[in-house]
Image (tube, rainbow, N blue to C red; front, top):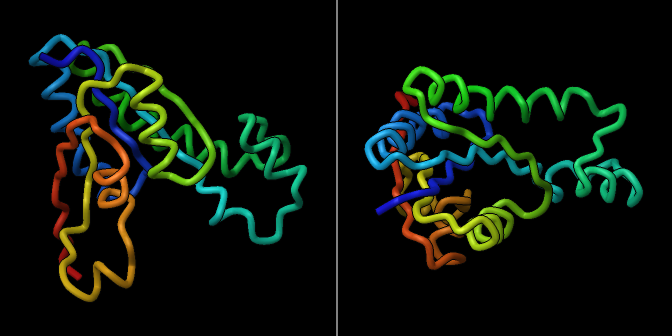
Length: 153
């Protein structure tokens, strides 16, 4: 049923909540797992020049080692969990608007399922804060499994 499963991650507790579900599905179906970190260009664009933004889009982080390390740590959490269950994983770092990059990656790589965490926010709080998960749901035709992360705050 699934041969390629995508788990977008930013390293947050919300994203980590979805890892076990993604690994379980990949193991169950013998699927390859794709761990995708998206550098949100809009978020990092503040204070960066056009040339720096273009380099990030090309995956060239140059002196921005902290950003690259953060991305590798986030995908590494997925890779470590997958390795414990003998699940093949592909780690990717891309740049752009997160929900667009996720949808494009899913199309380009023939993804069968996207597994994402969500804060479980409702009402005004969700509307004001926006949601990459919600935008991804509207941007792709690929099924999306949403794992709620309900923190204690």
